Amino acid sequence: MVSQPSSAQATVGRTTLPAIDLCPRIGAEIEADVETLLSGSAASQIRALLEERGVLAFREIHLSDEQQVAFTRTLGQIVDEGENYVYKVTMSKADNAQAEYLKGAFYWHIDGTMSEVPILASILSSRRLSETGGETEFANTYAAYDELPEGEKEAIDKLRVVHSLAASQRYVNPEPTYRELRIWQSRGTNTLPLVWKHRSGRKSLILGCTAARVEGMGFEEGEALLCHLRDWATQPQFVYRHEWRVGDLVIWDNTGTMHRALPYPLDSGRMMHRTKLHGEESFA
Image 1: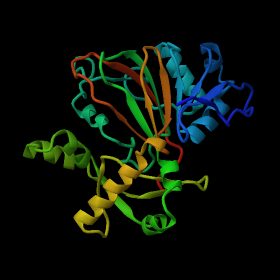
Image 2: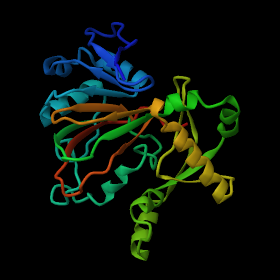
Image 3: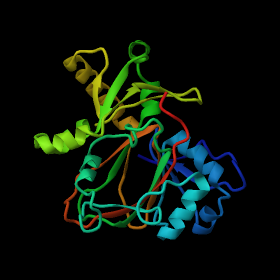
Image 4: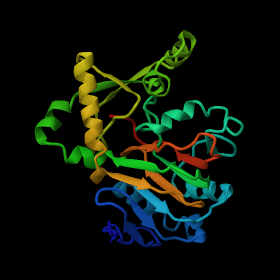
């Protein structure tokens, strides 16, 4: 698909960065230098583009950890996670003791569905790549909702869905031991609206592998609805697939997208460094 200039290039803040749409309904590639990103002069434009396009890619910009943290701070309040605000996303247990848990990243999800206020955005940079696989896909849940038939919008408007860690971990381990299951269940559940009515007036779908059941529906009926909506939201017109190069930086709006990593050899040494922005809006 030939990239087209973004419609969101009006000057916002002090600096305007060139941006190219990556797919019709999601994604933009931004051209920027490190000095501009760290100055914060383009932060307002970046945030506006992030809400409009869902995913922003900065190709081979090669930020250090300290620079990534500084850049993240220009966009909002950084989450204190990992070492000096940087969390290592890898399947190597030597580098991350939670590697087993991270296998859930291979399935469509929204970060923070077990919280009342999910993170606003994640900023991910590539340090080592797998020789095969490992792309990241993003689905625009704003656009997916907007294009639902009106009858379906009305039917799901007031539905609520129970989310749990156990539901997501069953994708990875469908036959847990009793001890494993009880550990998952100890994290409890969180009941969220199926349709997120944002304070901006926009609406998006809350879906993904943590969705366990629909309140007030039989198991099979609810399961079928969640599967249907996931298939709808992950159609090609709503999805951007990022094929990583070392040094890339990608930001996604966690309040309006789902994401997943595509399979790759777990012993490949793939390493991504992540920073996150605190949430600014509760599920509603």
